[in-house]
Length: 262
Image (tube, rainbow, N blue to C red; front, side, top):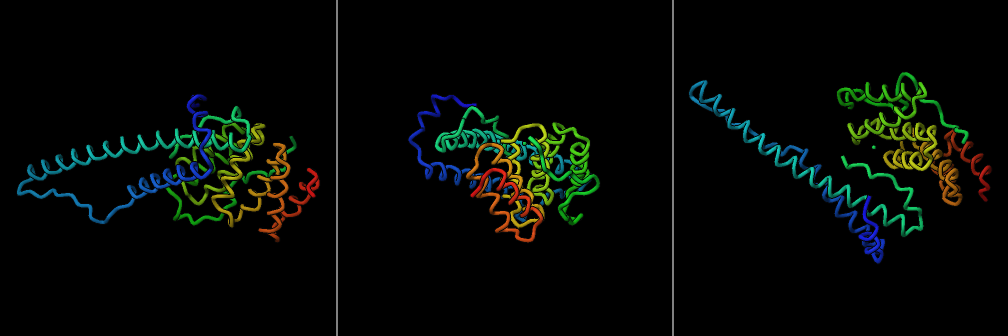
């Protein structure tokens, strides 16, 4: 993904340096988000004394807006490309600093994708309560399509569909569950590391939501399967601390015993 020579040259970076770079990237993303917000001052001048004058004014305005759109698109594409490369670089260095295996890092997703005890995906509707008015056009249908692939046992398609879903509807109300179900599909494919990342994304997106206990439990279970026993024990213990009334508390305690947590 990156030249090892250029990366090793940055080994003297501290975690504070990396956090500062992440802060800069976060600021750039916020700038992009502001581009999507209207200022309330937009207006189009199509005045004219005749129909031909008004048509000419509309054509001129259309050309101006097209040019502005292309300019913004090029700027956003440059930021996305730069941000993707820099985040991939930071992930590589963080894994090195933490003593991880950099060879296991997959390709960086562009900014914008053992016995299992996972709960089967619902066939008709998502587990996360949603207000239909808050869903984008086609959002529920796309989510349902991914759910059906998961229920049918087409785990590769399900994982890809859920990843595409969150790229298409970033920050949507079904996003945390999409990550959770993507983790289940990846688990079934034997990709435990990426499944753990999906479970973490699900929990991080909605740490107090209705599926948070399951996401936290699945994250802890996956960490145990990856041999990260200490981290798994702490994570599984958090299920009971955060969600004392959840049925996943008993499952988390059973998992803790099975991996030898103290």
